[in-house]
Image 1 (cartoon, one colour):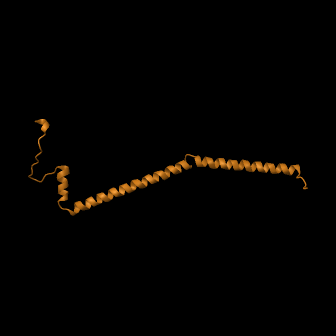
Image 2 (cartoon, helix red, strand yellow):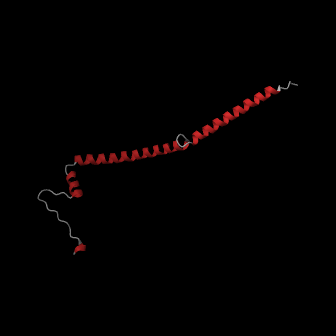
Image 3 (cartoon, rainbow, N blue to C red):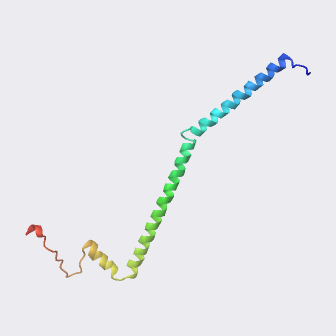
Length: 109
């Protein structure tokens, strides 16, 4: 049979054990608080990831729209009559000496 440990040594070991448990629990609580924090936690990180994904999708849509508009600008610059056609259709522009004739409104008759 072994020699039982002295009483003073056994109590000293229990004190150290309690200290380690308290420090460990404190670290776990601090880590949990940091993870659930509003500024450095998991939720803001997820929010940032979601916003980054949305921004990437918006950038892709904008780049697609830019490509479409660049193609339209190229087609307008390459066709000499396209600019005149656009001015006549959208802005109702006339050449010097032309007269604009609008159809009658049937409600006014």
